[in-house]
Amino acid sequence: RKHLKATNDSWRVDETYIKIKGEKMYLYRAIDSEGNTIDFYLSRKRDAKAAKCFLKKALASYHATKPRSITADGDKAYPVAIRELKEENCIPHSTPLRVK
Image 1 (cartoon, rainbow, N blue to C red):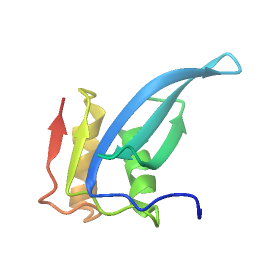
Image 2 (image 1 turned 60 degrees about the vertical axis):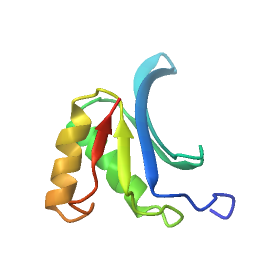
Image 3 (image 1 turned 90 degrees about the vertical axis):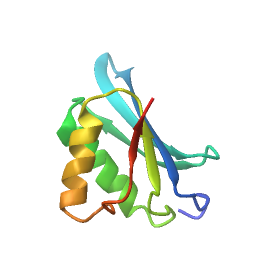
């Protein structure tokens, strides 16, 4: 997508629930430290599998720089998903997960 800006390597990830046609869905969103959108993902579930799918999608974005650090809320799914992605060498092992 030509309208997306290049991002920096400090990622913030978060999720919230929204209703779409009366159905509860989870909106996952990743932004960089300057507020540029890296990617988003809609899921019916809020679990480690959904978080991993979202992060894989964000990592595959052509305009996104690989993360130097990832900051997340207290959702327990992110540490599991990030550990699995590190084991698959999708994320460098040196990339810390900061929890706010």
